[in-house]
Amino acid sequence: MDTMTGDRPYRKAMTHREAVDEMKSTGIQFDPYLVEKFLEVLQETE
Image 1 (cartoon, rainbow, N blue to C red):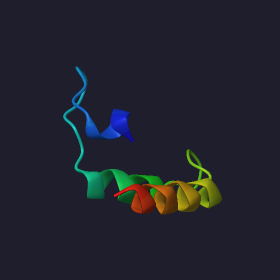
Image 2: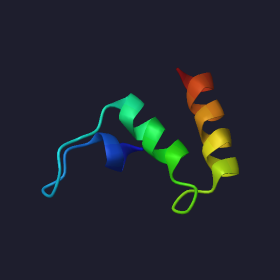
Image 3: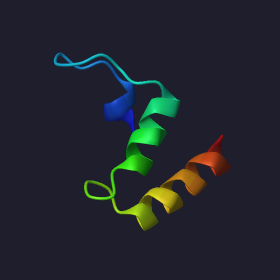
Image 4: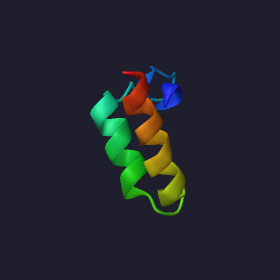
């Protein structure tokens, strides 16, 4: 998540919402089950 929401030399940072949407929309790069669990943990820590 930090990589997606932080500025990089090759692209500007995404917002938190954009990063979450990106993780949810790519069923190939990220395992949908793990994305769901990761987002649950993120919500618990906020």
